[in-house]
Image: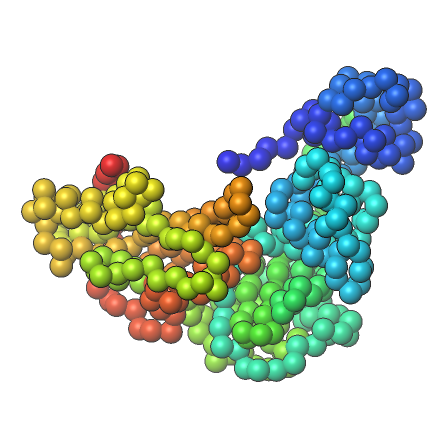
Amino acid sequence: MSRQYSPKSFLRQAPNPLLKQYLTRRGIGEDIPWKHLRERQIEHIQRAIDSAPEKIRREIDTDFRRVYGMADEGGTKTLIDEGRDRHHRVELAEGFAKMGGHLERAFWTFLHYPKVFRVAQQLHYAAGLASWDRSRNLPECEPDTSREGTRRLEGDLSQYYSEAEGRGHHCKVDHYRRDSRLYWFAYPEDYAESRLVYDMKHTLRPQTQRPAFEVIFVYNEKDHWLDLHARGSCDTKRELRLVFGRAILGVDLSSLDDQDISYELNGILNPDFQFVLQPEDGVDYALLQSLRVRIMGEANRRITLEANTRKDPQGVRELLQVVLKAKGIPSDLVVADRASIQLVFRSGATSRKRLTIRVSHPNSCSLKHDPEDDVARELLRRWNIDVSGRAEDGSAKRRRSVQYVIRD
């Protein structure tokens, strides 16, 4: 379930001592009776914020949104990991264990270790992105992680965007390391745009802004792959990989395929197919939750099947056989083009982490950048679902179709 930010909900969840500390730094809330204020009694706090100057109110809202964005399990783990980085050397886990929730942990870190919070926020944001273009089997080389390398990437990205698209005349790049992963967050300058805004005197007037857009590179030193998150065409992304290769890796990446990721799901239709797991995967079991198949032929129909796999792990495939038999459709005319697979990871005695993989032929996958997602990618390769590097079966190309949804 998605989490929706609400100012009042934030105030009710945040502990009063942290709110007092924050508002005091902002120079407001002197009249709040903190000693007599119960937790979640927010009327006095809300009035103090509402009566503050508009500039401060906007800044408070921005800060609270940032904190709320880190107030989940992934955010807490990222804060702990970033605190242990050699640039901070702060151990947060012990103190976090005594706190009442993820929002308290995020808010406390925001107040006491703002540098840890800022970096962790960027990494947590990147981990939640789903649209990545991955290039594998890069040549082994030593990436330039120096300040000079970062400045070179800034200049090369600025040059590329200014020449190709007439924007990006300025560019700022932040670089971070997380174990074997190296991150470069680039913020080129976008096209200028004029918007109607209310100024501090509540007067509506036009204002010209030069916003930034983002380009993110993630390079894995151990496995030699590069992930790119950027808007644009395949040609644009190819050029961005070339820029990164020259500026950071010192190599020419022009020989890499523009699209080297490919998924093949027909193996799931084999009655002998199994989700093979090994103890080191840390996964208790994998379940096929849903499957979409395409019926080859003149009508070219699609059928989506869903079943309660907790009661019957083979429910989806059994349902498929029932449907095919009822419709008189030969199994050799069926092509699988979308699947939803749930992984249940081993965890503590009270809970298990579940990850749902949504994968479609030819090259769409929902996996992101969490550690569990990396495990899932390895499993897709083991199960011969990720068949990157192989020739695509021309018979599996997509066509327009009629869709049916069948639920058990």
